[in-house]
Each structure stands twice: as structure tokens, then as C-alpha cells.
Image (cartoon, rainbow, N blue to C red; front, side, top):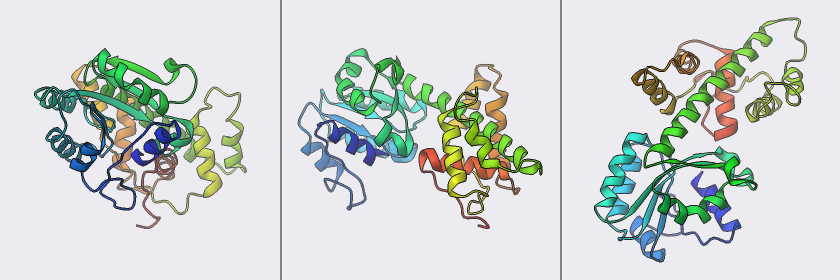
Length: 285
């Protein structure tokens, strides 16, 4: 995803230096040389898996960046980690923003939905980058400054929790149709929903695409991973006494997918692969 974001920024004539552990795609051989290559004041955007990897990258970058620089965490970090990272960088007078990014493997072509947390000053500084990453059109349709540090990732967490529920509903409908013998054109049914119906969406379009590529989903195992945001959303629902039965049930369905053979969970796995490039398990694995 970061690789595609670099490409989109370059298409907008923004100079980008990228670092990745993969020597085939990196511009520089280390984080230290990345910081050295970017003119000060620097904007360094971190786009790596959440958890220990993000923590180690931000910690290492903090040792090389300088006062007046700005670090943006665009991964799917838990919002509680943002406060800690912001405090670490503030000690060195380095700015920090958290930006929830949605768009998956399609973002290079279509642009990314962006949810920013941080100071108004830092958001304003980063705005040329944010505008280049988001889709063309009104800024308010694809970008929001949600609030202070942590707010961007909190909004993205809830976004992904909703995504869990939407995918589960589509997938259960798929299995219900697939089980009924009178349904003779299953892919055509979903295709007919793409325009004019109340359930039309990009996820539905990707569902049709998945069925075009593999009509019976025979190549996909029904094992569905959860990457953290769904769990965090349910934990926040409990902590704030907010009923979230659809998101909670969708998360539990992913747990059950690791035990039973389920056409619905095959579809959830296929949808995750379609929009985010998430790995699927081969059938029978």
C-alpha cells in the first residue's frame, strides 16, 4: 500500500524518497539514510503493519529526525499507541499525526479515503500530500480532520468495524442464495443489484468481480483472518456501553471460520482479497 502511495504522490509531481526492507523497491538502504535524503523540515510517512513493527520504526526514526520535522503514522495502529508515539516525538520537538487510510490495492488508481488526527498546524502542513493521495473532487468527500492525536486511527478503527459487518451481511446473503436450487444465476443476481438498488456499494462491485474470477470460490479456503481493528472496535463498544451486535457477530463469525467449512466465510475471504489484497488460504489448506 505504501508502495502505491509513493507512486500516486509521484504522479502528482511530489518528490518522494521511500524506504522498504525489500531492496527491489527501496530508494535508500536504511531509515537513517532515508532521513538524510529528505530535505528539512521533513515529512516522514510510516506505512507498516501495526504493533511492534510500527513501534520499532517510529522509535528508530525518532533517533534520526530533527526538531521541526513531522512524522505521520498512516498504518492501522491502535489509537492508544498514538498518544505514546506523539509524546515520544514531542520530547524532541518532532510533530506527529495519525492518519487512517482506506483504499487498499485500488488506492493508486482511485485515491484514498483519509482520516487525520493531530494539530491543525500539522494537518495544514501535510495537506498537499493528503490532497494528492485522496480522490479528485471536494476534499470533504474523502478527507476529514477528525480531531487531536489518536482521533484519525479511532475513526479508521470504527470504519473497519463497519466493514466487518457489511462484508458479513453480503457473505451470508451469498450463502443463502447459493443453497437454494431455484436460484439458477447466482453471479447475475448480485450483478443486477449493482445499479438502482439500496444495497449497491463498492463492496458489492468487488463481490461480483470475485465471482467472475472464481464462480464457485473453489480456490479459496473459508479461513478468514482478523487484523485487529474489529476486535478493538468491539472492545471500545464494551468500554463505552454501545451496543454493536452486527460488528460483534461479524468478528465472531471470523473466529468460527477457522473451525467449519462455510461458503459465507469463503466470500468474506474473497472480499478482503479484492479490496485490500489480503492473503487468502488455498482451498483444502
